[in-house]
Length: 205
Length: 205
DNA sequence: CGTGGAAACGGAGCGGTGCTCAGCTTATTC
DNA sequence: GAATAAGCTGAGCACCGCTCCGTTTCCACG
Image 1 (spheres, helix red, strand yellow):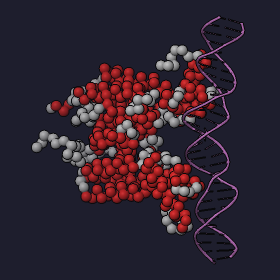
Image 2 (cartoon, chains in turn orange, green, blue, red; image 1 turned 135 degrees about the horizontal axis):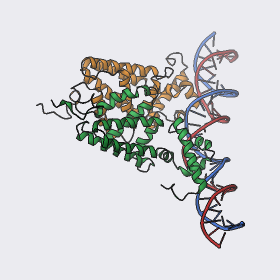
Image 3 (cartoon, chains in turn brown, purple, blue, red; image 1 turned 90 degrees about the horizontal axis):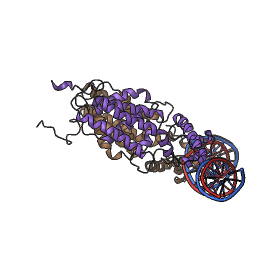
Image 4 (tube, protein in one colour; image 1 turned 120 degrees about the horizontal axis):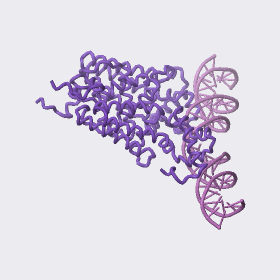
């Protein structure tokens, strides 16, 4: 990135501090937190914030970069170590859970994914691709419905994440996952049995 | 309503005109359109707008009231004239389609449904109840999955509506409906066949 | 008809937002 | 130590939601 190498010492210090402060404020107030507030609490002029993060999305990208990397790495790990259907469902669940960290981040993500100029574009595309790999692997194994692609999966995750962001629905997030995501993704028979063996034991035993 | 009877002639005129102008601007700019803009274009002081609609939600409620009434009436009509599973799916589809009229209205609705003081609360609760009736009828007929209630249905509709509100995903709205809503609502085996001819339950061979 | 008074109106004003830019300060380099 | 490029600041602009009070307008009653 442009902020890696040739940066004046004081600038780098401000950059890091700004990011640290932003992390807290965005976690508390959501993705549309006041940028003035962030600059103020960081003890820095507003112009300084804009110098380092020319747009709000650039700031969010810096905040989310590592988490997004973690999620794509997690997808690859699950894809290697867990049965396809379970890997897919687990990953989707983890993605939706993650978004609860920063309110309103889902909206920004879906806006960014088909806006190549967005600072978040690359990360979101990468995330979608990681999901698509898990999905197609699960489809090949008969553990996920055919006829869906990475964008569908991305939309599903975004929708669930958005629901979890609504105060009125957040308590039901887990239940909504079971009601919406599991049937949408589930293979022909493995719907309930794949991930949650503890929910209810059918009369097979 | 308070705006039905004893209203001065000029006030009523302003009220109606404001509503008409608001309808256009909200349709164009979404639920968080500038209230100043609405007042300005209506040729009316900002205070006048606030007099008639003390909060943004009050304005939206006035805008949406008749449509909400139409949707609940539609639910009852479908419930009487169409097989349970088809009635449910058709109604859900119509609900999600409707929200495309005003961008961002979904967010306001889910915020209002558990906020009794909101001007939109009553309408949303009524809508949820109408959906719940369709749902439980479909469940009784075996044309919808058990284990879901009116709030789940409301969340499903809201999620789909929100997805349809995102420019990047709007083109896929129909497909996402098939991928998400149909499996989530569908009966045990009739997933694909639910929409058009499900009332026969062909799996009993 | 007036006309008094209640109802409605208007819009300046307050505190907030995102974002820009001209002028100033400071780190770095020679 | 000076030159210079990089970085910093915050006033300023246009907008937002919302309030509040002086002014205008309607309308019912006399």
